[in-house]
Image (cartoon, rainbow, N blue to C red):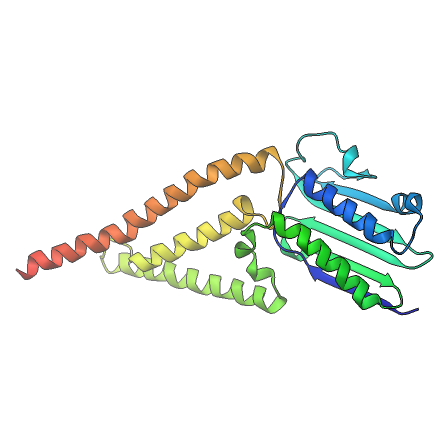
Length: 246
C-alpha cells in the first residue's frame, strides 16, 4: 500500500491548554478513519512537555492539572503512532524557536497524499485561531543561507556603526552620528525581542504574561529614546541652520 510523508514548519502562535485539546480531538478523530479501534488510538497517543529539568508524559492534556506551563518550558510535542492496520504517524511540535516548531505526518492509505494534505489543512485551520506575529523576529531561521546572511549583515553593520561613532569622537566631534546610534538601537531591540519578549511560540506561563505587560513599557521607552536621540537632534540642527543663515 502506498505511503506518503510530509514535514512542514508551523506558524508562530500562542499555545495553551485549549489549543492542545483542540488538536488532540482533531488528531484522534482523523485517526479513527484509519483505525476504528478508539482504545488503540488512545493507547498510542501521548503528550510530552519538555522543560529545563526533564520531560512530563501525559495521555491527554486533561491530565495536566496546573493553570500555567512552567516558566522554563522548551517544547510541547503531540504524538500519535499507529502501525496497524495501516500506518498513521502524526507529530506536532511547539518550540520557542522556529527550527523545532514543525508538523510531521506519515500515512499509509490508498490515496496517502490526499489524506496527509487533508490532516495538515485541518491542523492549520485550528492553528490559524492562535497565530501571533512573533515570526517577524525569527525570519533568519528560515534557511541555513538566510541565517548566515543575517548574522554576517548584523556583524558588518554593527562594526561599521561602531567605527563610525569612534571616528567621530577621534576627530573631536562629540556627538555620535544619528544613523549609527539608531541602527545599533534597532539591532539591540531585535535581539532583546527574539531572546526575551517574542519567542516563536509563546506558551501560557506566568512569566510570559508578565513580559507581555512589561513589553508595552519597554517599547514606549525605546521609541522615546529613538526620538530623543535621532529626531529631536535633527530638528534642533535644522532650526539652528535656519537661524545661522539669517
